[in-house]
Amino acid sequence: MNDRISYLAGIHIVHFFLEKKNISSFNILNSKSNVAKFVLFTYEAMFAYFFSKIINPHRKCDMYIDFEHAEDNETENFLARKILDSKDLTSLLSGQKLQTSYETALLVGHLLGEYLYLNLNQKNEDFSLEQILNQLQINKKHFHMIKNALLKEQDYKKHIKRYF
Image (cartoon, rainbow, N blue to C red; front, side):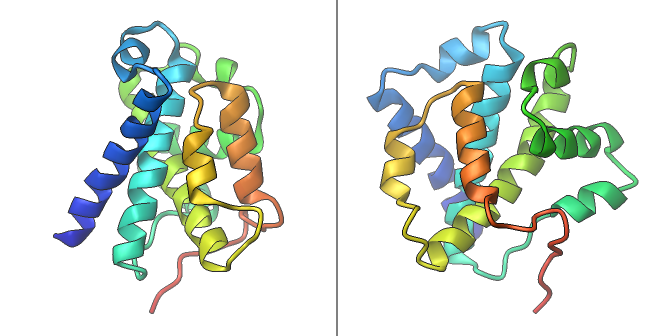
């Protein structure tokens, strides 16, 4: 139960910091930009997962290697791998259904939330949760900056879920 509450709190915190910057989630969701919607969904999932992981450090998510071997949700798993490996969000998301973009954003967001947790838990000096939240922007340039910062020095393609 606490996982779900902290998950929702993470989503709320993202929207709180976006509102502080006068970034309207409503406008993003009503826009025609698949990229903006995907980035919003990814940040929601990333911070929601991160905050629930604080409450339950044993929480697991699918890792890159799981995306490669998944038999269900093939489109979402394929897109998640391509997005993590690529810089071309626009062409990858072009023509995708909103549901596909959302489910892909959950996969990518949870994975990035796992690496956010690891970086902050390892006291990585390059990471400040407050700084990341204060600098949130809903665009592909910022998404790639966050993604690259979190995955830098990580062998994310080979990491597997931890089983306790």
